[in-house]
Amino acid sequence: MDIPRIELARLPTPLEPLDSLSAHIGGPRIWIKRDDLTDTTASGNKLRKLEFTVARALAEQADLLITVGGVQSNHCRSTAIVASKLGLKCHLILRGSAPEEVDGNLLLDHLVGAGVSFVSNEKYQDMDACVAEVKQQYPELSAYFIPVGASDETGLWGYIECCAELRNDFLEHNISPGYIVSATGSGGTQGGLIIGAEHYYLGANIVAFNVCDDENYFLNKIREDFDLWEKRYKTGLDTTKLPINVIDGYVGPGYAKATAEIFDTIKQVATMEGIILDPVYTGKAFHAMLQEINKGRFADTDDIVFLHTGGIFGNFPQRNEFGFP
Figure (cartoon, rainbow, N blue to C red):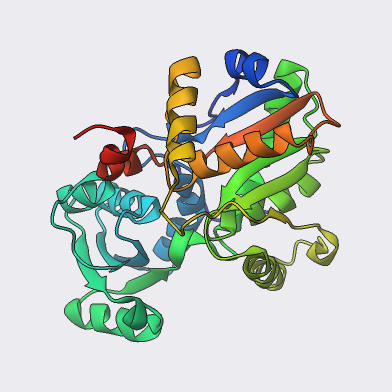
C-alpha cells in the first residue's frame, strides 16, 4: 500500500545489546532499539510518525503546522525542527505556564523560530478553541493540526514500518525476542508497534508502561486510533483481535514527574552502558521494566527489546534531580 511519506529520520537505527546491565540485573538479555538516534536534534520516536503525518499535511497544501504538548514536549520540539527544515511555519500550544528559564526542548523550540502559546490546563481541554485562536494569528496560511504526539491513524504508520526494520534486526542478530517494551504517553508508538508486529510477523508481545493517565485510557485511545486507521486505509487487517498490553502502576507522582529511583536508574544505565534515558518517558519505562524483570514477568524469553524513544533534552530542566546545580 502506497502511503505518502517523506524522509526525515536517519534509518535504520541500531539494535544494541546491553550486556553489562543484563549481567548485573539477571533475567533475559536486554536489547535497546536506538530510536534516540533518528536525528541529532529532531530525535526520537516522533520523527518516524512525522514522516507520515507531515507528508499528509503537505499533500493537503498546508504551510502551517499546529501541534500541542507539555512545555518540555519532545514531539513539539521535533515538529518545530521539521517545520524549519521544510520551510513551514510552526506554532506550538503548550500546556502550562511559561517557565522562568528557557531550557531543554523549549529552548530549541524558540531557536528554530516556532510560535509558542502557553495555555492553562483548563483551556487546554478545549483544544478546538485553542487551535482556532492560533489560526487567527496566521490568516494568510493554510493550517494542519497534528494531535499530541502525532498519535492518530496516520501517525501509526511510523511504528508499523519500524517493525519491518525490527524484523531485519532480529534476523541480523539471530534472536527471537519474546517482548518489545516501550513507554506510552499518547498511544501512537505502542499502537503502531502492535499493528506492525502482526503485519510483519515479529512473534513478539508488545508491552508498554504508561507514563501518564491509566491503563483504561490507553486501551480506549489505541482502540479508537485502530478504528480510524482501518476506516482510512482499508488494509484488510482486523485490529479488533490485536491485544493491547499496558502495565499500569508506574506513573508515580504524575506526568513528567519522576521519583529518585528513576533518576538512579537513568544514572545506572548511563554509567554501565553509555546510553542516556530521560525522566519523562524512557527512564520511567526502563525502570518499570527492570522492576517487572525482578518480579519474573519476562522469565519466559531469552531476549527482550526496549525501544529508546529519545527525550535526552528533557534531562536538562530537571538537572537538580541528578544532584547538579
